[in-house]
Amino acid sequence: MARFHKTIFLFKLLGILLAFLLIHRIIFMIIFFDQFACVPFIEFIKAFLIGFLTDSIALLYFLLPMWLVLLFFDAQKRWVRGFALIWFGFGFTLINILNLSDIGYFPVTKKRMGGELIDILPEVPALLVSYLKDYWYLLVLLIVFIAAAFFIFRSQLRQYKSVSQPSRIKLLDFLIVLFLFGSIMRGGYGTRPFMPFDIPSLVDSRLQWLASNTPFQFLHTLKNETIRVETYFEQKEAEHIIGFEKQFKSGGFKKKNVLFIILESFCTERIGLLSPKIKGYTPFMDSLLANARTYPFGMANGRMTIDALPSILSGIPAFMEKNYCYSNYNNNTVNAISSLLEKEGYSNAFFYGGLKTTFGFENFMNINFTKNYYDQEDYNSEYENTGWGVDDHLFLPFVAGKLKELKQPFCASLLTLSLHHPFPVPEPYRTLLDTIKDPIRKSIKYTDLSLQLFFAKIKQEDWFKNSIIAISADHTSDGLNLLECNTINAFSVPISFLAVGDTSFNKIQQQSISQIDMYPTVLDYLGYDKPFGSLGKSALSDPHPTVQYSGNGVFYIYDHPYQLEYDNNTHKANNLLRFNSDRTVTSISLGGENKAISEDLIRRVKAYIQVFSYRINKNQF
Image (cartoon, rainbow, N blue to C red; front, side, top):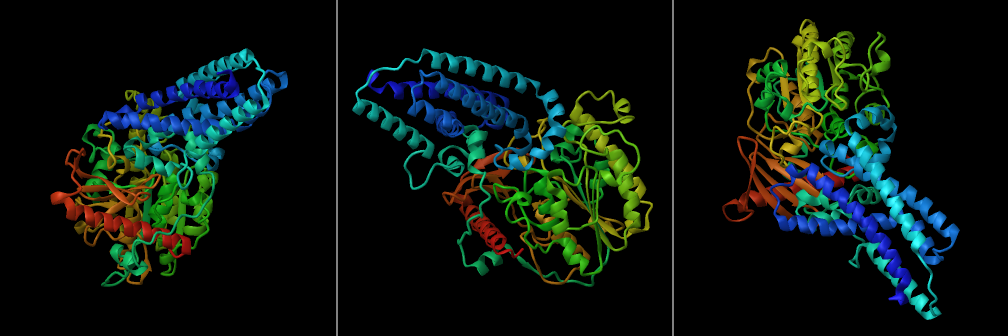
């Protein structure tokens, strides 16, 4: 075996590092096992086998200078060992940071983070202390992994001894390494290199994030590429299927004030009316939603706050790997609700208690909603900054005062701040709610009390009596485990419309709706009768499906009570689910008596995908 001395040595090093990433994957599986529990055992085997490939690709790319130096030069030389150790320390530390830190973020995004990590780097310093406080064990694991790997790696380098080889054997040894490493880095010899999009077709899509890893996902989503325009149908047919072009029948345009309230992380699981186990923490929200037009089967169109703003205010769902606000489409001209109502004489404003620079909110608002942006810098009073900005019990009454000053009619939007990690509860509420020990439940109660303060103030105003208020959470969150982990609950948020004084508009609705349907619903209610285009549909019309993007080419289309999983890479439906009254799901056959349901949902999800890809590339939203 001395003939292939370098090959054996390098693959031995790779094998040792793969063992560390295998432990990462096992930790990931254990922590989030409740999300994978109903998956057949054979799929776990497949996921771990694919995991070896994704781990190998990540290790070869992130440590590429080290591998090249060890391949081309004698590893017994001091400078070679020194360079290899330095690059190993840098590259392997980065791999560990990406993989382990994402364990803390996975409950929120329900996916491995990719290139968007670079976009959110400016937010990291403000969150680092609270993140480390809650996930201190990840820091311990990071130190242990790096220290152990560095010790073993240095030991292997010291033990390495050069052997004398004929030139032809040395060349052969060299070529074998190049060929094998090149094959791994490409992921085989298919028509194209192995990509994250290939994973769902090889394993159960519920395990795609177990099979992947954050460094691998990061590598393949760094490019700010345009998305492929799909051609399932003639474009006019695709747009007809989803009803892209709209013009509502109207008995007259009611110039009511419009207020969107986007609640940070206040997902279905955290509303007592929709999740009985949390009753007692949301008495105000429960009474508010019970007396409004509320949709218990509301769905988010993304996984992060930066996805919710385009979805709710502009009707642009998160159908890409990149967040829309960070994509190369972010300067597109969008006929959002603000621009449509501005032509009708409406003024606009946006309120957020954090900084304008957070996640690029200001840039999106300037282009798509309003330049009248009120943030923590506009709040002049003293306050205790325990989280991202001005706490809700202070900022929401401030917003109430500013709404009173707006020229009517207005279209305004408010994004709350609380109920986000690290779940800060300021005084005097910290003491008042001291009996609630769980930080998430305490933050839920605090947010509910803050909203009660807000509504107590605005109910006294004249504008309130002539308004429609649209309410939704920005995205789902984890931490309470009150609902079954399934692909519907993973996007489930409350969506509600409060039309003040309209008692005919206060019934619970048993149909599907998503965030992109919110502004068409508002326009329909107002009696807006001019033509416009939107992926969303009015929830006041016939029931219609909603579409969510899970990542890596997998889409979910949900038409209560059915949800279909569609892989846009293989162009196949993978699964059909029926959503039960207890918010659990049952897997049912795609064929047989369900064939008509499956075919209809496949046709519709293809149309949504095509229209989105065409319109966003043509800048025609």
